[in-house]
Image 1 (cartoon, chains in turn yellow, purple):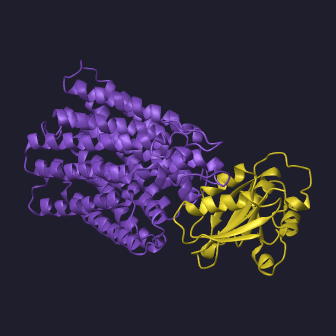
Image 2: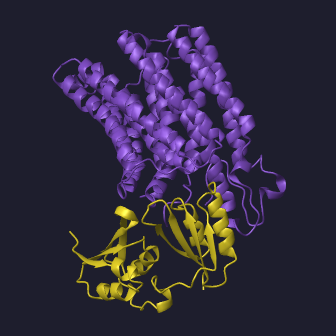
Image 3: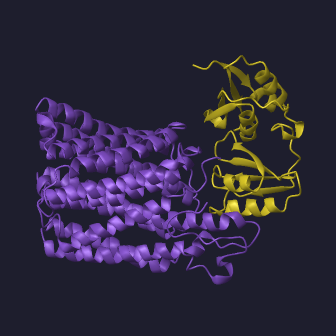
Length: 169
Length: 445
């Protein structure tokens, strides 16, 4: 059984803080074979790539109220030695959105069409936000193919999904 | 990648399944299998397995390869197993059917055909169960739980079927013969009830709320529905196996299972009604209106079951009952949802890459609902006529109903091919720069 070190990013993020350095410090201090259990108020999708580069597989499970528990398990691969530059940090504050869409009452798949159309008009590094009724699972591969990054999660009411999309730099 | 990508072989599964459906209809029109033949006759076994494995199970597997990753927002455990699984299932089914035909002296005797078919089917379904099961297990919430129970039922169905196949070949010993003699109802309930019905219910929860903009059914409620269904299957399979082992009657076991099954259908009706009531989208698309006819058929199945049991005529009319389950409820729902799923996946495959960069058609622009609704109406009306013909023991009328069903299905298949070929999309929008026309039988992405 893998032993996990717990990191709870929820209070840091709630206080408007930046947990990336705390997480990376915790990763740096892990014993050989030890994993990391992260609690976050949303699914920290961009962190998955960062951790995969460091040789960790992830499994995310949703908790009550839209919060997430993510297990990062070492997969025995050689960890990446290059340091993660700050601009790649998933928790460096993204710029304020230049577009805000409320797509909650649109018929599917209209929200996806509108988000992609708006995303195409973003300048490098700019962001847009959208409110949705459900997790836009079919949108993610399209964003990924175009080099966009996103953060998303349900609000505490569980009925509104908030998505932020950032254009490539 | 999060599980919203297009499953490469889903269209291939759908095409194979629809081909088997046409084979089944041809058999019924020709009067091969029930009701012309006895319920346990080899010809009936051919027809039943063409319908349940070839048409319903293969269509369901194709849909699940696409939708289980969406249900759990995780990629499929192994993409590469989908095609070998289809090849194994097809080869296994062909061998099984040849075995039944040999049993009925339509082919030279070859006792090894049935066990060979069983082994191929077990390996094929095994790949499906492991692949989908491990995917669903990563986030077993809501509808994914129905899929897990459905897959467990599929394992039970296949296990019974394999024992039967070996017993028919004379290779299963006394215990195998005992299971063959009395286990057929258990095999049928686990397959039609557990695997096909519970899985269809689970997937429909998500599809209905997604396409009608309704909140998901409360977890507590859908859990209760699933519990009733799972208890029905567990009572049938577990209780039935014990009853056979101790040489006891199956009536008590099947009565308990029937009560749980009715409770499950009633709770499902309540959940579906709640989705329809709370929907934001008032206008119902064709696939939704047609799905309602299949829900009505499920309700009619429940009523018919109650009437047949209370008048002690179930054994006499089992064919009519099973026909309504297979064609009114399951096939009706699968056809209605195929119509929507094919349009949505084709739209996503063709226009996803250029969306936001060029004007693209809407999903609704790929379909011609007024034309398609005619074929669906013919299909449902002829299914209900076919059920009445079976209840009235009128084989001639039943064959006419089957012919009318064939007309409806051929029409629906034609609509699906037209969707895949983008034939109903107005030409300036059909292929914007950068978009690639989809292949009829598989996804290019």
